[in-house]
Amino acid sequence: MKLEAVIIGAGPAGLMASIARAQRGRGVLLIDRNPRIGCKLLISGGGRCNLTNAEDREVFLRRFGRWSNFFRPAFYSFDNHQAMEFFERNGLKLRVEDNGRVFPASGKSRSVVEFFEALLQRCGVRVRLGSAVVDVGRKDGGFAVILEGGERLDCERLLIATGGASFASKCATQGDGLAWARQMGHRVTRLWPHLCALRIEGRFESVKGITLRRVRIKHRCGRHRIDEVGSLVFTPDGISGPVVHNISGHLLDCDSPELVLDLLPEVSEADLECFIRDCRSLHPRRKCSNCLAELLPQNLARFVLGKIGERRCGEVSNREVRLAVERIKRWRLRVVGGPPLEWAFVTAGGIPVEEVDRNTMESKIVPGLFFAGEILEVFGPSGGYNIQFALSTGHLAGRNL
Image (cartoon, rainbow, N blue to C red; front, top):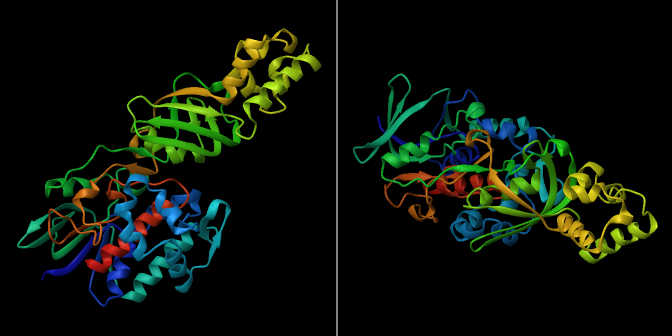
């Protein structure tokens, strides 16, 4: 017997699509290779699950840059505030924290998974867990889904919501869905890591673990410009932290990425220069790095200033004062890479959006085939944006599946 619809992947996109279809009174089978739904939800947000962001919806949409137009129909059909109302209405209490980030009130991602488990049951969604799909293809005007062990499921309509190829060791997301899409005629763009640390030219062993709450990062790659402020932490071979994660996908997509760091964004260059000159006159025998320890961690000041930091303030020339200001306010760093893709939290790249109907999430190449979530090339910043993208596109796909 041919099934009406099959959804592969029980992440946020597949879960939302299953519920949206079932709520319209239509049958659906949800399949996942993991023993429990929502594997990635369990580990997102440091185990707390940052579900979405509470900011104004137009501001939210702009966070997706060049993909905003593609995302608009899905987002307008199920935006961030509708998502919050959906969770609250169906029994999951939420809490809005700093920068608009939305978490379950329990502070535990397990609450989100339990919420979806209960809602799937209430909606009558058929779920098969621990069932690995090994192949997908077109068959008799529909699709054939082949499971490990040889079982074949035939269906009229198919949604692939298997995510990208990151976090493979924890959630078995190996990019299978991308391979199936390719063999059915879709292109797949280059894949690279997003929401990850960056490796920087040079060594940072002496400053590893130092955290700055507010750093400005600027970057330009072609027409794309970045100007972000946030928390940053130094690692032995580079930089990490929220502000770095937000821009990592864009930087790693650039041929020769160079960052400009402002370590003191709330202090102007003129004020910083006056501070160093005052140190020179008031504390001529103190090391320059010791004076700057009033503004920056001393080890970091010593690392950034190099030999100037070891000089006594009274010995520092006017030219060296200006050079010290430049290094603190316009510190240039060259990005040499990121982690392996399987270590990143989000996959950048995937199925090109021009091959998907933004009003339905149906393939423009294969009728009856749908995509939602991270399998698409779209990615957003940290803070609940990527899960909302999965929820919105899953919701739209489920309504049209």
